[in-house]
View 1: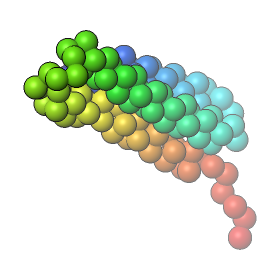
View 2: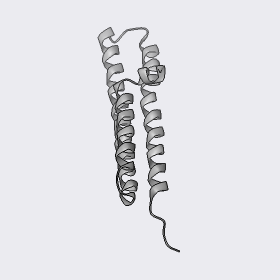
View 3: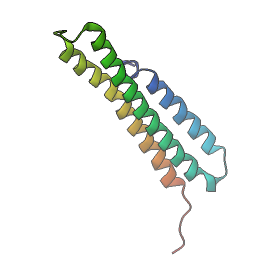
Length: 111
């Protein structure tokens, strides 16, 4: 749960979108599922990147509030980068899951 908390709002947005895409995809015709899952993978990746960028902005803003000569700035940057990396890790994992779903559900080619 700490993993999700550290990643911030972007983690929850990715999770909700991934669950929604899977739910939507399995209720549609079989021939439409690969496109739905592939589109969901792209949206989840975009949310992961957005979560990472907003995390970077939060780290920068926090350090700016402390002043340019704050001695713990390097430590804060390290902690912040570690936390926002959770967004990228989770986004890639969910996108891989949805991408695998797109591959598995694609129509079989005749030989």
